[in-house]
Image (tube, rainbow, N blue to C red; front, side, top):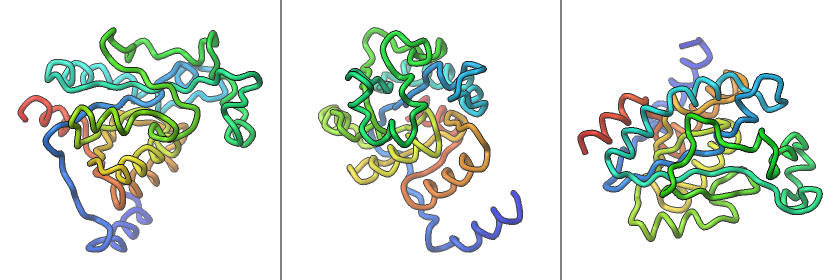
Length: 212
């Protein structure tokens, strides 16, 4: 742990360091693991995402064996000139690549959804914003969201905040989220763990799925 990280941890101790733990019924949410983030030469390429995707098969196998619901999200713009991306595609025009037919908008091979797994398409950062995710989870009786995907500082953070605000226990699997640079990745994990959910290891998550 760096000096700044230790100082932040000490400053937050006893104030912003509560734990919520896993609840009774989890669902695994896999956010935007698309090839644009893992293809060298892509403007979205993020080494941290490559590493996170490589760790996902173990978690997917465990979730499927435990009969835990697995939900995937992708980003796709369907309107002309990506108008359904609103101000976000103006702020971040790199996202305009997320259109049907662009290889960057296809799922990474390691996390291709099974035929019986739900895919929710979104146009903004949070997996909850403008989608049916929250009522779908409620209808399934889910109380815990095991959160994976990319990027940590963008869609993961936004989904974690909204997950909490919709009443779910948010468990972010540190090993299975990634970003393009370690600094925003670590800063956002710290902030999520402090205020919006629990940041947990892959091994801790696997143990929960196999024994609970």
